[in-house]
Amino acid sequence: MMRATEFQELVDAAITLEDDFKQLQEEKRKKAKYEPRRRFSKKVKQLRNKAIKYCKIQWKHHPRGKPPGKRKKT
Image (cartoon, rainbow, N blue to C red; front, side):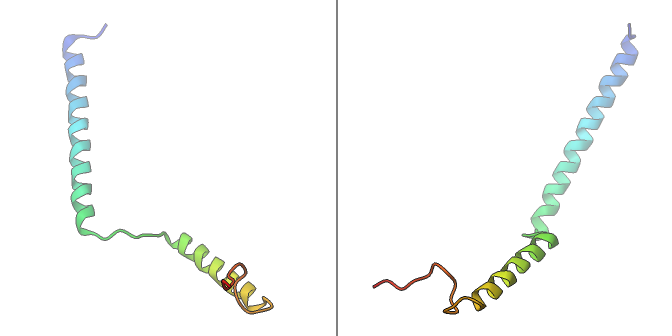
């Protein structure tokens, strides 16, 4: 069995870790208020641009030169 002093030391260490964690979370929240967040990661932007480029090429080779699915209402 554990001695009471050892148990109390473990409890104190756990409380200290919890307090440190809360303090870090609060600092992150404060920092996030002042720094703008990136909306998309670099990889997502590259994939999006690649997809747009591919669609433009496909539309260029379309018989009427327009994206498929867009028709005028009569």
